[in-house]
Amino acid sequence: MTDAEGLVSKDLIIPRRKKKVSKETWFGIIAVSIPLLSYLIFNFFPLMISFALQFCSIENSDLSTMVWNNFGNFKEVFADPKFYLSIGVTFFVTLAQFISLAISLFISVLLHKKPIGAKLFAVLFFIPYICSSVATAMMWQWMFNSQRGIINTILVALAGEGARVNWFSDADAYRWTIIIATVWAAPGYGIVMYKAALNAVNPTLYEAADIDGANSLKKFVKITLPSIAPTTFYLLMTGIIAGLQSFDIANMFALIYSHDTIGGPQNAGLTLVRYIYYEATEGHNMGIAAVMSWVLFIIVFIASFINFRTRRKWVNE
Amino acid sequence: MNSRRIPLIEEGIPAREIIATKKFVRSKKIMGAILIFAILMMYAMFLLSPFYTIFITSFVNQIDLQSTNSFIWWPRTWSFDGFKNLFTYSPMPDEISVELLFAFGNTFLIAIITSVSSLFFSGMAAFAYSKIRFKGSNALFFVQLCTMMIPAATLTVPSFIFFNQLGWTKGELSYLPVVLPAMFGGATVIFFLRSYMTSIPDEVIEAAKIDGLSPFKTYLKIIIPEAFPAFIAQFIFAFVASYNSYLKPLLYLADDPHHYTLQIFLQEYSGTFKANPNYLCSSVLVALVPLILIFIVTQKFFIEGVTVGGGKE
Image 1: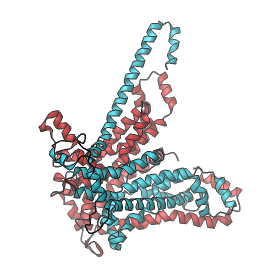
Image 2: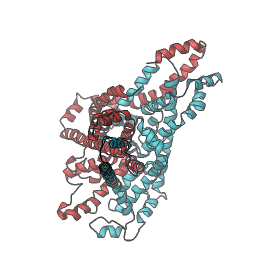
Image 3: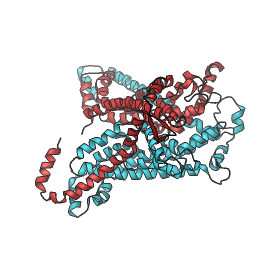
Image 4: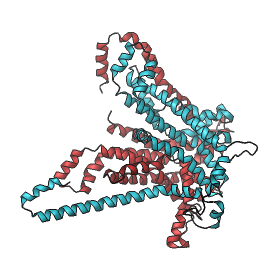
């Protein structure tokens, strides 16, 4: 780091600095403290309360009624088959992030070959990403409509009435509606990131490979993939983190289904965050919600931590 | 194009063969280009299909919709019933109010207040981290970065319990849990602005100091104008994120229709008019159009804001 160097040279050049230091320091400390304090009050403090809440029972969401309940919340959560189901669903829904990553790599490589209309394509491909998840869910709800949806209409036209799929009442189909809607929206981000990464690959590497007579597949595997590996890793980790926190589309679809379950047919779309949200609001089980939040926290934290640690290796600072 | 191959002539290969090879290479290239274009077109069609379906269905009338058992590819007659209902709908029969306007008003107000304010404080922190040397600065920056590792969704319920205890989940106060925590800056924005600000030469700041500007005035008059492109990029990004945010407004603002943001309005509207696909589709269309317009106008800045840190909430 050049920090130590800078410190020495500055102090040598401007010896009068000492006088002004206090005012500047005060400004610096205040400026830096505002976001930190805000985080402390609005996020970290509640997180600590929820930590304590895991071990307590509580009435009417009133914290003054907190009473130690001898790990009752944990017993309840870990004996709840829906809890394990929701973890499974969460991991399954995260699959959408892997598919999106593969699509964004494939599409951005094609875009990098500068086909006709590449610029227009690039703008177009980003649009789904900025659409709100509520709008995305509503659009796909209509696409997947079992009677008059465009998808079933096409399926029936191609393969007859037997091909009609009840997307919102068949558990296996329902799982995929969530994946497809997510995969529609997500790759835009990856495409933009990969585009920047592909542009940054050192062109002399390709020239050297040309001289060696490497074919394009070999060039892709030996040069392109390693060069954009940091981006792949970053997208993979942020994708996993986002996937583990899936809520919006799962929640919207669950509201559409709204029968005797809280997460679609046979709870096939009950993600962990959807379950936590349900317990905290309609269920009024704050203790249960706190325990599940912490389980989610630990799962996501492990993924985030790996991302954060390895990030330093390739972010040039 | 293939100028590098010309020396082949000297190697004694007949000219006709070279031309044939060139033709082959060129036709192979054209085939490749067509294939790439075709794949991209197919992907574009996949992405556009939801927009097409909601656009068309918005203009189909209710009777036509109910009389068939398949998707209507093109309206027989163009009906505006969906839009009429959307622009007059009020959940409170005794009030003459248009719910959609409340939703747009709340959304824009929240988005602008939170994005401007959080940018202002993030920028100030970024200025302090990048240009002011004080003890503990590096340690605090590390702590600030650590907040990025705590996933947002896991904080939602704990915050809900906390704000509920404060009584901020009912009435007008319920705006506070949505607005306040988002007002004072966050790690990703600070990180982005800080790396941009390090490129501002120190001499500019030294000169401001000699002119007798306080650090705060330096921030206002020197740093903000110097780093303006970075601020714009982050503003657009924050604005869109706020416009689209769902979980937080759902927790705090879904009780009173006057408090709805656009996303909550959409959700409630889709519940109320389950049986009217044309109503649903026109509401989605109207909610999407402003954002897509903003994106097309500002796409350069927007993509810049995305490439450096940040993602969906």
